[in-house]
Length: 194
Image (cartoon, rainbow, N blue to C red):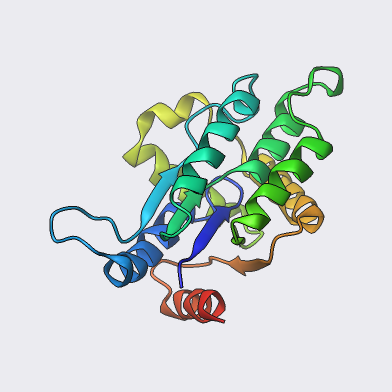
């Protein structure tokens, strides 16, 4: 069975690390070539367009690609839930690019493709968030231009936890409190096989 998974969550929640581990699990299982890595397709959609006027134009292109790959394993890092939240956080209500109705339309298209959401969260610990932020800045100094306070990331996470309730997709909410976390990965593997 092919797995179509969207990993959502506030910044600093551990999406990239968790996805890398799930990719290592799914890619060999779905591989049909010894020349290219075609067992699982990983889309990093967090490329700076969420919360901008570009997102509603780009998201349909991704949906078309997902349709093309419907018989393959697909991992997506942030998608329509992130667009809804970024739009809410960064745009005044009168200048929103993506409404709750837009979210529902995309949600239904994803449901037809059997997508599920894994919402990753972090403990509500400001010291932990400050450490994760510093780790990110050490790896990606350019992130400093948009870095926020721990309070902001907590607010962002609260929105994810609330808005995911509006999705018709099956979803799993897990807290990422440490790296590595084999127990967390086992829960994900069991859920997607379920």
